[in-house]
Image 1 (cartoon, rainbow, N blue to C red):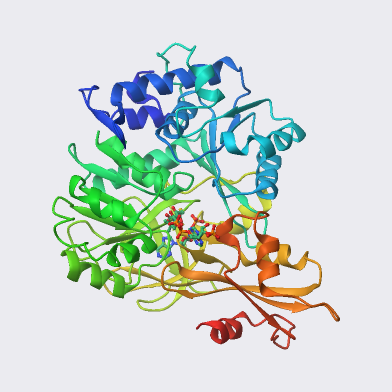
Image 2: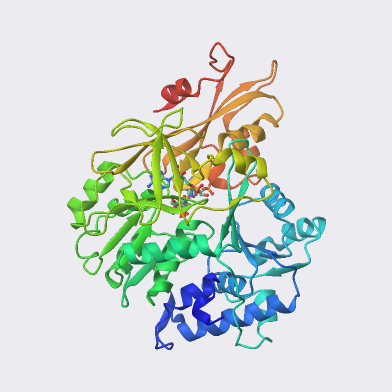
Amino acid sequence: MRERDNGNLFAVLSAGFPADRNGCCIDAGEGAWYSWDDVERASAMIANLLSRLALPRGARVAVQVEKSPEAVLLYLATLRAGCVFLPLNIAYQAAEIDYFVGDAEPSVVVCSPAHLGWIEPIARRHRVAHLFTLGVERDGTLLEAAAREPDRFATARSRADDLACIVYTSGTTGRSKGAMLSHGNIGSNARTLHAYWRWRAGDVLLHMLPIFHVHGLFVAIHGALLSGSRMIWRRRFDAQEAVRLLPQATVFMGVPTMYVRLLDEPGFGPQACRNMRLFVSGSAPLLPDTFRQFEARTGQRILERYGMSETAMITSNPYDGNRVAGTVGLPLPGIEVRVVDDAGRDCATGEIGAIQVRGPNVFGGYWRMPQKTKEDFTADGFFRTGDVGKRDANGYLAIVGRSKDLIITGGYNVYPKEIESYLDGLDGVAESAVIGVPHRDFGEAVTAVVVARPGARLEEGALIAALRGRIAAFKVPRRVHLVDELPRNTMGKVQKNLLRERYAS
Ligand code: MLC
Ligand code: AMP
């Protein structure tokens, strides 16, 4: 098989690397940067290390580290070695990591040096064969071990349907599900977006997103790699720094919170955006007001797109055509999107229904959850997204809600059921309901409504403190309201809509 016939995602992406391998691929600031040649060689060294471990076929490499260029090298190396990459949010705490490691049974875990103390016992309990650390100062045992490896590696041959990544997404039942994405799923979406958004040599991506979710890991990085474009790399989003760096960039990708924060910067305007050709927003709804304010301030119309961990990107506003505020645009080429009523019939224009998707981007199923997978696909192979929307006369899709009980806060998903189960386990709590309320910065804020057991005295601050350190900080309710009882309908179901109305302000 020739290299260009290899379905391995790394082979697909590296076909876009520039001929001159000495140019900058990742510019991490303060003089630290990786050339394209460095990326090839350093990912080869880590891939050699993984190969030497003689892992079983399909072995998972679970990674919970701070964002760094080396974390990207580890991702690329995992693909090259033919292993399965499993990214985990750095905010996750012991109980969350314990679940993921127990469920995914990775052969390799790579963690931040600062987390080793509590991850090591988890890895031991789950009989993880290899545990490495990777820090942000090019430190940790992973790079130490890889330093002894050769810097050439023949990328593993993969078929399009071979598993490349497992991305965990929260589940309505409170149990996270691992979405199994193949080399073909991710590669096809990368190529589609590369063409659709007109990625070109000479683009410069300002990368400030986290890299443990599909937005920062796939959508942003793959576009840059496929077009041989430089990435200006920062560990986290900071609005002031973004304003300072944007003049050097042509492309930026962010969640709506980042656009709201940019607009809050007094110095932000057309000067900062003078070289920009594309601002992309996704992962959560971009308010039409933000879209309009951004255009008024900068002259730039943010391109909003829609996707999911299970499907990568599904729809996008057009690059050249009209970008319509409050919509997520049109189905991407090669991807079918339909809006259907309860009986599965196509909705008329403007009619609200369930959004379903079919295409080469759609994942193969949930890791070790065949029943859940079956339920989430229709007989004719469409994936039920759990999102609710409508199409206008021009075919633009607007997302108007979700049938899944999900809160999106600052682009992170939180499933109420999971938080309720933690709250219900606390002393003195009889029951709880977790809802999302509008929040200027995060779009939605996690809010809890709690009923105490008879005789128990609960306090908001103490309940919040009890959850901190047990679950990721972004999941901890910002407010806890104490009530005598939860509103229920005649079937006994908690009426969350009433709670959302009551606590909206
Ligand atoms: C941080 N905090 C959050 C939060 N992010 N709380 C709620 N929601 C969030 N998203 C907490 C911190 O832990 C901290 O808590 C407090 O809020 C203040 O933090 P901050 O300094 O203001 O937050 P910051 O670090 O600036 O992070 C905000 C952010 C970040 C918006 C930059 O959340 C972010 O990068 N979000 C992007 C998420 C993303 O990439 N989603 C893509 C998913 S893929 P405390 O208590 O410690 O003070 C997907 C598919 C698709 O959805 O279509 O793309
Ligand atoms: P995740 O499970 O993290 O992949 O999140 C996917 C979910 O994010 C989707 O099912 C949508 O509910 C939501 N989402 C992604 N992009 C958008 C968008 N542009 N507008 C509204 N919701 C979005």
